[in-house]
Length: 252
Image (cartoon, rainbow, N blue to C red; front, side, top):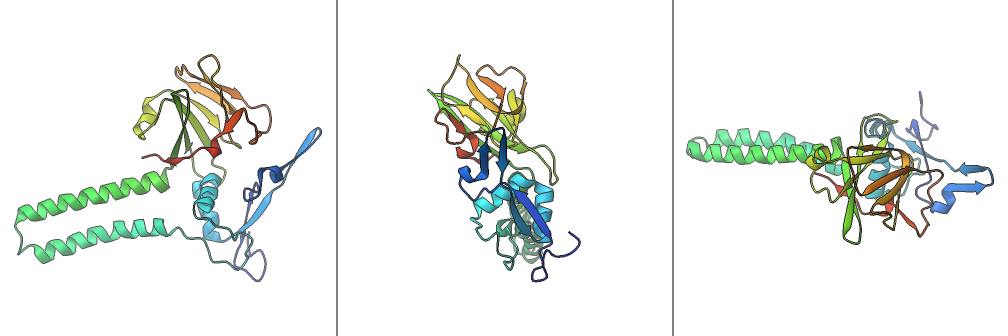
């Protein structure tokens, strides 16, 4: 928007979303031939709109849920700030500064071997911190597991692109994915996360049956079968479990 939404606030953007803070029954009204989806309009500051544009809608909503943000309708609220991100970047800036000061101050008192050992330790800390920030904020991938009778699959949520319309994809792998490098090494089935994916609570023909949008299989995945969802996913169904009800963690 070229100006603020109203004169009493500096917010100048609107975020359109499903009303995820309300019960699932409130989100869609089923009526004969047509279903009505109720949209939630969230006023945002410029920097918050930038977060949505850069990281995508899914990352923004997950940030709101993770930080238990509940005052979306408050036009006078302060901008949401992810303090952990700021702290991480400040840490990366302070570590090399500390190293330079430390080396200059102690170069006379300590032998070279001690300085080299300290340099190596600080270098490892810097690299680990950079990798953590990359995996946690710049290229997010989250994984959850679903098991039936000791057979397990891994559901990995990831982004293929950036931007306000950046889609989220779900990749389904046989077995448990523990580390990020396994995502590139194993065959998988992929679905577009337009809403959610549903997983059958029963194994049919020794396969997990998964419903979602635009299903595609890359390589040979023996125990996974993906199908196109023909309608809105009923999260209250007792025959299926939806992926958002699983416990996801960041994949490193």
